[in-house]
Image 1 (cartoon, one colour):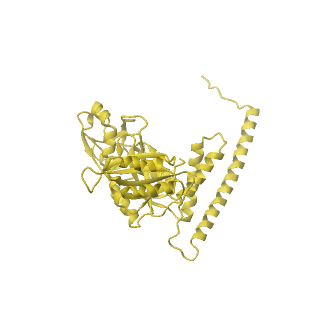
Image 2: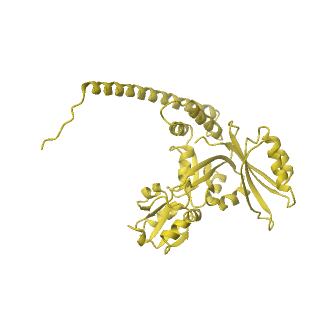
Image 3: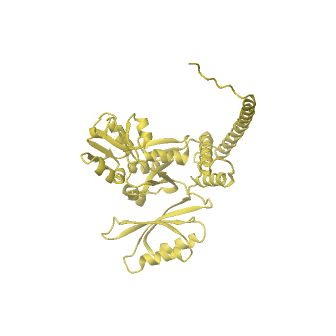
Amino acid sequence: MSETVSVPNPEEAQQLLEIRNQIDSIDRQIQELLGKRAQCAQKVADIKTQGGTVEAVFYRPEREAQVLRAVKERNQSLLPDETMAKLFREIMSACLALEQPVTVAYLGPEGSYTHASVIKQFGSYAHPHAVSTIEEVFESVERGETQYGIVPLENSTEGAVKQTQNKLIETSLTVSGEVELAIDHCLLSKAISTDQVKIVRAHPQALGQCENWLRNNLPWAQLEEVDSNAAAAVMAQNDSTVAAIASEQAARIYDLTVLESHISDQKGNSTKFWLLGKEKVEPSGDDKTALLVSIKNESGALLNLLESFYSRAINMTRIVSRPSNNKQWDYMFFIDVQGHQDEEPLKTALAEAKKLCDFYKVLGSFPVSPL
């Protein structure tokens, strides 16, 4: 039986050739322009380091947010706004690496969700630095081992991350940015089926986010908490009776089988991460300010505090309470509001709120993420 051979239509072949020639020409122009952008980045580095300055700040969260917002606003191509912004995120990451590679501490090992948040915030050309605990992320930046750190703040299902809250109370670091990451938990193992799994390991937050799925599908399995989901994946490498809750990326990195995907109890599961640094972030035009307060234990105290913002039409985007470490049945409040601490009307509102607090700390002002 002879095979049918498709003969190219001469007119179609000519049209494809012309389009491909156009693409080649456009690619050359893109490459030339990228080279010019890199040269500009190098000139920025030269200016910032004139005179042998060693404390020059190269990464400016507010500037990057402004650039990415502009990319989305002027986008009129067939590519979605988010896709276009992600492409520019990588271009900016490569150019920033020419000025100074950014070092970022995160809760490791490689393949954790915090690692993914580093890439989302800084691009592929950042230098991630894995540490074993959330506390060590803070300590790495405080000691100057890394320039920035990223920590999980809050999950849409399980709520606030206590280790992060505890360190935010005492740290001198500034919140410099926010990253929101969609979480897609998978069950990973060397086993070939869930029947072989006797132990499931994960970060406490991940175990909580998959609690119902685990109860219904692995009721016999012992659940064990570890410092990170990626650490659980590492542990699953050498024991087929152990499964980890982690990402598909972790499965690829650690050569594990994805026994089940999408095991979170709630769809739309996401986690917010905060970027930590030492430098104050200037206004970007669309910002948030995070603060930590405690108030007098008396009638109307919280209402009076909130009135400072309400009376000036300042939107409060988040308020979370937690027990105080100093006095039983006293509470502290983590509050996020729209605006930058140095700009009105928020500047006046914060000054008024401070007078009403027993404890008052601005954690930082930072750009609303464009990605």
